[in-house]
Length: 291
Image (cartoon, rainbow, N blue to C red):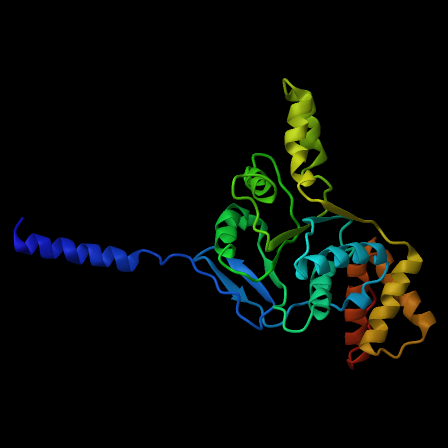
C-alpha cells in the first residue's frame, strides 16, 4: 500500500473519530439535588430550583404522604426500600408528593450525608433506562428515579424493558437506585387493552398476567382518590394562608366552590389554579373575571 493511500485512510479514520459521539458520561454534581435525564447525548441536566410545594401544604393525602416519606427516608439513609407506584385520580397531588417527599427526606438525613438525588426520566425515554442505570452503577450517590404520568398503549413494548429493569435480569437494579412513578391507571394500561387480551388470547390468564405484571414490580402501591368538599376547601385555605391572601373565609370558600364547579372537579390542582387566579386578581387593577 503506497504512502498517499495510507495517509488518506488515516485522515478518514481521524475524521470519523471526531464525528463519533463520545461515550456517555454523567456527573451527579455535588450540591445539586435534582436532574433531568437527556438521552441524547446521554447526560444529566441539573435543575437549580425544583418546581414543588412544601409537604405541609399538601392537604387530604396524609396517609399517602406518610407511606411515601417513610419509604424514601429509609432509602436515603441506606436501608432497603421499595419501588413506588402512585396511581389514581388526576390532579390529586401524586407528582407534587414525590417532589415534596424528596425535599423532606433530604432535610432529615444525617449531617455530612450526600443528599438523595432526584432524576426525572421522560415516558418516551424509558427505552434508554438500561443505559442510565449502567451509568448510575458507577456512582455512589443514592438516586430516586422519577417518571411522571407513566402509562402504556397498544403495540408499546417499552413496558417489557421497564419490567426487566425493575425486577429481573442478571444485573438487576443497582442498590443505590429507587424508581417512583405516577399514573392515572392502576395497572398502567387501558382497561380495554387488558379485556381484549382476555377475549382474544389462546391462554387468557397468561395473556392478562403478562400485561399487568409490570405493576407488581412496584412493592409500594399508593392510591389517590377524588377529594370531598371539606378537603378541597382545606386545600384552598392552606394555599391562601401560604400566599398571605387577605380574603374573608366565607368569600374565599364561595369563590373556590364556584371555580371548582366551573371546572367540574375538586382536586389539589384545581385548588392551586384557583389560588393562582385569585392572587393575580387581588394584586391587579383589572376588573375581576368570573371563572
